[in-house]
Amino acid sequence: MEKMMIMEALPVAELSRLGLYKDGKHLLSPEDITALLAGRRTSLVNLKNLVGEAFTIASLDVKLSLHQSGRWGDEIMLHPIYKEITLAKGMTEEELWPILTGEQTNLVKAVHNPSTGSDQSLVFEYDGETKDLFLMTP
Image 1 (cartoon, rainbow, N blue to C red):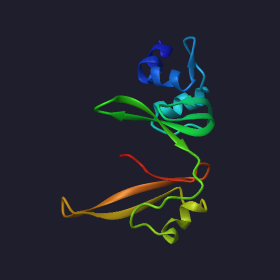
Image 2 (cartoon, helix red, strand yellow):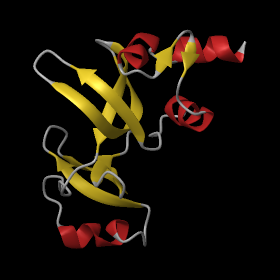
Image 3 (cartoon, helix red, strand yellow):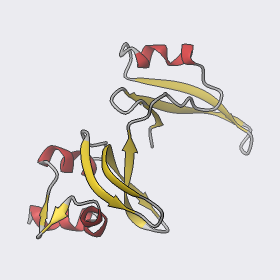
């Protein structure tokens, strides 16, 4: 029963293309499958022989997450290791220092939304392994 729920919840075709599902079995650890199903990122996963329309990559270390799109359905998102931190618009490195150093786990920033005329709070997290600053989804 549990295997059936996982099969229905994860996009098996995408995992197969990434080399993470073969012969009816997930090749991710149980912890990584749980992370995907809970909406979190996996640990670092090494993908091999990725082939696209205009590229071939022999090996790539990434973290994975599950993204639900109304247009495409469930998609596996790849989060590679970046050389430098990419700051969000209007954000300074000084603001990020507490999460970059691990003093805090996230950063809440009030941002003005011109379409509604009000401020909204955005929550950012930083992944030190991939050097990725990302917006947490509500």
